[in-house]
Image 1: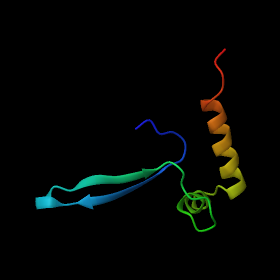
Image 2: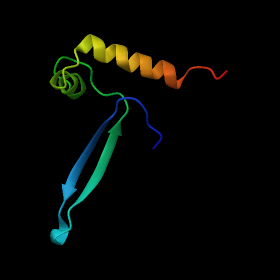
Image 3: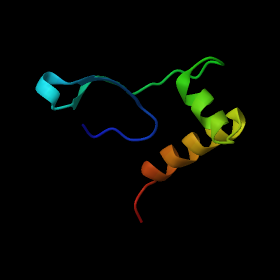
Image 4: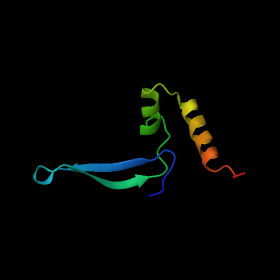
Length: 69
């Protein structure tokens, strides 16, 4: 899909006839950033404070979009 940075993918697991498969429903390229959103909550669970998460996202975006020498 060519996505980069933080995304959220909604998926389901189907198990037709005992052959489980993951089916992607949609990719959200702008995940929520509120106090109750999944990305900040996941980062917090990994010990990454919200301010650090924002800084990391900006730094990675700047690296991806830096002009070539």
